[in-house]
Amino acid sequence: MRFRGVCAALALMVPWGAAAQTLDFSGDLSLQARWFPETPAFAGQRAGSGGVVVEPTLYWDITETASFTFTPLYRYDSADSRRSHADLREAYLLMYGDWGETAWELRLGVDRVFWGVVELHNLVDVVNQFDLIEHPREEAKLGQPMAYLTLSGGWGMAEWLVLPYHRKRTFPGSHGRFRGPLPLVDDALYESGDEERHIDLAARYSNTIGRVDFGLSAFKGTNREPFFVPALPPGLIPGPDTPFIPYYEQIRQFGLDAQLTTGDWIYKLEAIRRSGARNLAGVEENYRAFILGLERNFYGIFGSAADMIVFAEWHDDSRGSLATTAWANDLFVGASVALNDVQSTEFIVGVLGDLSRNYRALNVGMNRRLSDNWSMRLEAIAQLRVDPLDMTYAGRRDSFVGLDITYSY
Image (cartoon, rainbow, N blue to C red; front, side, top):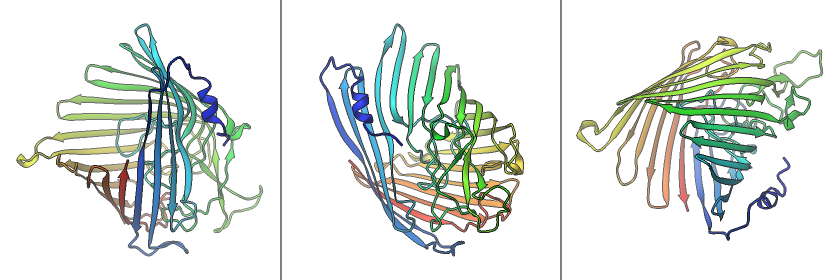
């Protein structure tokens, strides 16, 4: 990627009418370890791994109406060489002001954008690429080059994005846990002749009407979710050891996200209509997908200071067994408990089940602050059942327990 000189180029665009006010440096340094109790499915995989993650942030308040944020990331992993990597999560110039009764913001550079309302997986969230070597559940995002304009007022908020560069999805290496059953080539093919330099467009309008928060979004450009094709010359039949290469189509997507809050109950919806993408059989298929979510809040449980949230989400994809994602017909049920103590202790437990396949997983987590600067995160995922016909999880035996100790500065 051609990010050289981005800081200098963006700085030249700042109105230098006022002196710099703030220069702040913060970030996280994490020591991480994972233990996999099951025998690995592939040769070269280890029962445990350790690593270090450094994610600093430099914030520069340049003028009263402009700032610059810079957030790189570096990870070292002892077991998977591909998981040892660096990325530029954020490096953007932010300019803002008022236009009559409308507030505006313009971001130029590399940033992360989040759209959606549900917990486990967000269908409408299509701006950034996922970093699967960070976490198998699509929790981490790669930085995305963009020009991002927002306008907001009493009429709601409008967002426009121009995305000039496509980021390839990252995957674990051949010796990494959480890898899929197919060997992958570290390269990509594109439907567009412009390849990764195709200019993608995205937009969203959001507002609140009464108790309903909603957003309408649209995206046109390179798919963030790849299809996989054999890395072979045309006419040859792939074998069991044939490597595959990610292929990114041109798609169009329209999305809706909505949340209704009524007292202690929260009702959630995400739905999309997508065209241009291939299904698991390699055939282009227009499809729709949706997520229905429900939350119930309980305050002061058992007469204590603790609060609990119970939630459920159903994910459905009209492609059924030909869906290219893990979220074809899945139900997630869980609960989180916040003790509201000095250490900000939180627990979460959930069960994920594929209603069409014989797949079940148990998720358990805990977050706790150890001191003003130190915190810990404990996470465990137990693969209770794995369906060999499920292309997403076939062959995996990757139940694990992970511990992160983080120093925040």
